[in-house]
Length: 155
Image 1 (cartoon, rainbow, N blue to C red):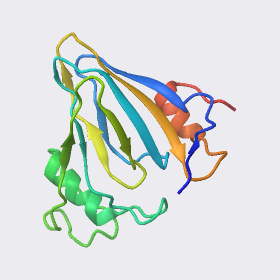
Image 2 (tube, rainbow, N blue to C red; image 1 turned 90 degrees about the vertical axis):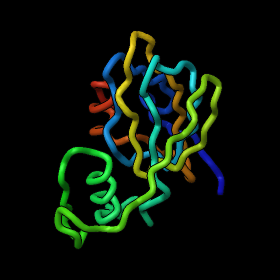
Image 3 (cartoon, rainbow, N blue to C red; image 1 turned 180 degrees about the vertical axis):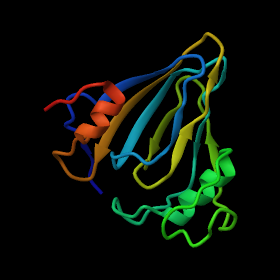
Image 4 (cartoon, one colour; image 1 turned 60 degrees about the horizontal axis):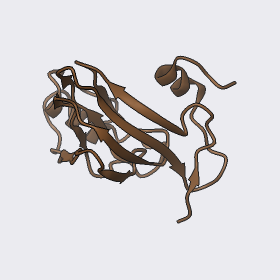
């Protein structure tokens, strides 16, 4: 597979800053995959947690697996359309924690793997450089994602 850097003028290359109490909720990325470089760990927390690939395509919501992870990893009860489990069943999905020592370089398929960053604690900010890639040229984030992450769009 070949790789092309995102052409998104806002989100192709960013530095994510997590201050005390900040986190990323469970989600899939729009980018096919990312390269991250840990620059600084928080005093506590800020763990990058992820599942094995759950989606078979960008259009696959993976409802059963997503509901299973959310039930196991949050205090909320979830039932998603088509998960076939109601609020109490479903197969367990393994969740792993990636290393995050400063200097750690990671290539991650975030479009297919459900992932989150746990809340940070302490005054030291969690800093991570993020570069977004796709298997074809010309890919950029949607205006909705640009607005959500950076408070503006490029269009």
